[in-house]
Image 1 (cartoon, protein in one colour):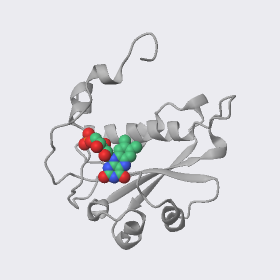
Image 2 (image 1 turned 45 degrees about the horizontal axis):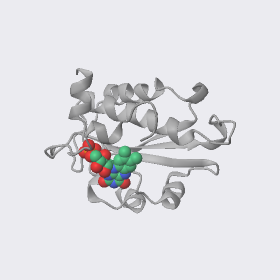
Image 3 (image 1 turned 135 degrees about the vertical axis):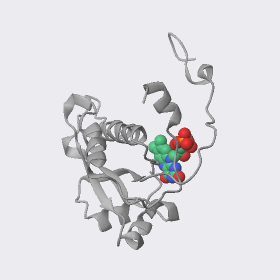
Length: 170
Ligand SMILES: Cc1cc2nc3c(=O)[nH]c(=O)nc-3n(C[C@H](O)[C@H](O)[C@H](O)COP(=O)(O)O)c2cc1C
């Protein structure tokens, strides 16, 4: 898909079919994450591929929406704090790196006809417990991955002049 069509077409899908996901398509999506840039090329994350079949009750403890567990797969990106690049003032860039990798996942998935939805309003303690995430590693974002079974609504966005200024902050 042409890039501008792709970013216009992506939207937060909140209803999924249970149609299986082809392995080669999943691998292409995961490879898009692998190719994402990261600060100092550290790639300080791990992506957990979770098959929803048989795990729906557990997954709903992480994020309770019914549609969260409708798709065959949920992906979680987890940041490894100690592996991330840290700026001289102490700012750890793990969340930035995770967000870029997740956006690669989401756009690659859209390109292959899948629906996704960024999810950050999850319960981090339950996510760590259920997914066995160790100390020092933070779940940053989740998305379901599956074929959509809804219809997109028109995007609402600020105008360009509301989000851009030139030469200095104003
Ligand atoms: C960092 C981030 C976190 C988000 N967390 C959630 C979430 O927890 N639950 C949810 O339903 N949508 C979540 N969203 C989706 C946003 O609400 C959505 O992207 C926004 O309203 C724009 O709509 P669109 O994605 O359909 O273009 C999140 C999006 C981002 C980028």
